[in-house]
Image (spheres, helix red, strand yellow):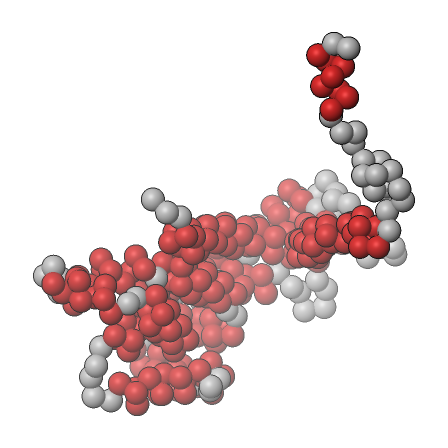
Length: 309
């Protein structure tokens, strides 16, 4: 017998599926484990279904936007994209001031997001880590503003205030009231209270940091994930806001946001659904970009402390 034959003789044979290592039919726990092993892969199936359900509305918008209205009204409806997306998008851009409305929405959403995150983090730092008279009363008042539908109840007095300032029809009337929100203050207060430890602040004071220096060098780096979440939701809300811009911007089309421009595409007795959804699909692209950017920052902030080195 050669060395190769000796090694092969000592190497145990691979077990046959459905049999024990001794060659007998598998029974009991081992048989049930092999029988239901495919159940372990069900979470992948659930994830695939969830992704498909989430993506389908965007896909259907593109399908309708790339066909004519006559095609989309057929029964059964067409479920594949057509060749008319460029035509519908060009018509949408030419019918309303689409590009200027897109720029206005981007300006409003960006300025609102930056200011809301900054002031919310600043106020949250004060409520979470500073001791001053009336702190609990003020925090209760901030929470109370979240329990009242201010956008509906405060519509008339806020419009009167904007009219007194001379801001009706201007983007300032949309930006300034949303520069800081009760939800932003409460959210960042909770994030700072759990993420920023008092020992870090004491170490910063020992190193000679001022109060704003602590906010800049200690607080902001520690709450990037929470600030990213707040920024993402603030941008989405500002971009999709319709009621307040409709009331305060009025007939000044040069200041209209993208939601008002999409509303103008609908005729009184007839709506060109393909054209409207072509404009809607183009208005969703900035939202998708912002979501990708903020989600990456949020994941980076959450995993930063989990890596040693």
